[in-house]
Length: 317
Image 1 (cartoon, rainbow, N blue to C red):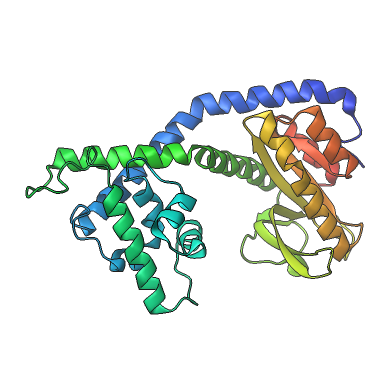
Image 2: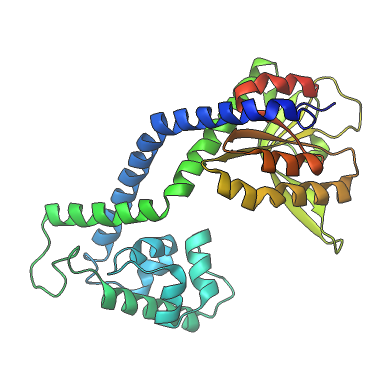
């Protein structure tokens, strides 16, 4: 049974209500979330400055022990440099830089001598381009004052959060959406078994977040597909597939239309592995226009709007 994909007469009103819901949340909570993240980033930068004698004693050891600070270091230069620009300027491995920033670790397969050489090159480039207006003590014999350190850390943190503003808001919105789903499930007697079940071991009446579901690519290789929420209804036939829910939010119409093929790819890979009995829906909040909805409907993907979350009940929950 379809919930929304076959009801285009309701789409226009739902789009407007969904946009209003997202905008209300953004105005009320996004500034607070951003400030909290900036405060955390400020403390992290202050710690990094303390460990490196305020960038005056910066060695590969710091990057080996704290590879995830590379993003902050790129924000310490004048001008702040992009990830690929650092790779080009310093002549270092792109995969190393990506692994450090995206995964917060060092690639284990890289030889120690090569790793140290790359790390030293990064340090040399950051030191060469360091923004002396932010770090006025560099090149001087005097130590920075507490006020200078705090000011520098705040500026770098602001640059960090500015460059990362969209992910900060998106992650906060995703947490909120999953919280709404959890609240709805538990109010109806479902038990959270996140981290304790797999697709094959999920009993009736339980749900889990961030569950990896195996799928098949076109070349028949297996791929793990992370699904935001998976729930097995209280009343379901033995051997039936659980309901899979992908939480989606968007702050503008442009990005949703760029990303609309992602869900079609996922459900295609799931169906290729598990057959047409796959139950996969979207949980939408924000800017999803009729073009996006029509595309998903054509792929056989249904959805529930956050402002009508009780429609989850229509899916046998």
